[in-house]
Image (cartoon, rainbow, N blue to C red):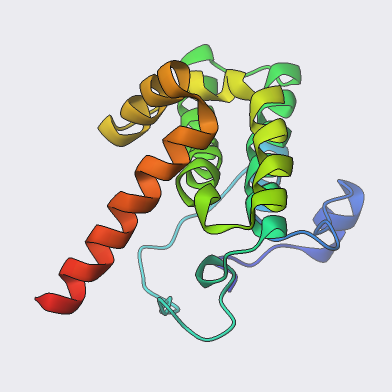
Length: 172
């Protein structure tokens, strides 16, 4: 769903196209629209409703590709923000927002097969610097566990927490 109206010429002139074959392509695309815009107008009126947990929704499926794309998005913006002239505090704030996807990959890692998990762990280790961009107690906790116990054991801890949460949700 689009939350805005954008001139076609603006998209073409700035080469702003969705990346084909990726989940979360909107997270790669939308901030680039704002970063390239000379002006933005905001209308304080609801024009669409976002439905949670709808069939076919990317965030409801758990695959190796889905977690890889989460890591890709975090790293894409890490690299992109290094190249862009922006206020330092704004860069950090944006990166903390994008890093959430990296943490999600850690939290759901243990739900994959062993071979898939090994592939993702290598990606996480290669990009572990993203752990430094945390904006919540849970992400700070995740970083500490990863540093002490490693990505694999951290994901096992979160799998148990997620399973417990699901069980309690069904009981209540």
